[in-house]
Image (cartoon, rainbow, N blue to C red; front, top):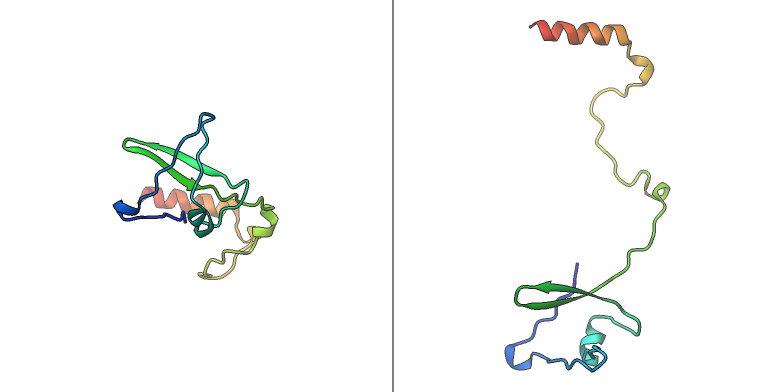
Length: 99
């Protein structure tokens, strides 16, 4: 969830853009947002200006580490592939089609 800093209009900080296109965020704001040296910001252009959002990297994850995280509630009797006979499955579906 992005952290949004809001200020009353009279306390809204303004930033100066240097000749190199750099800006400096006030130290109190950087501390509140947990930004250190090298922190990245996402810049979103909106109709009424720019929005800056702290870019928090998502660490890479091995898909095998996610196995078993979501458990679906069991409904009915557990079945195996061997429980199904292809011929009986086809005959059941063809009977349903005639009804």
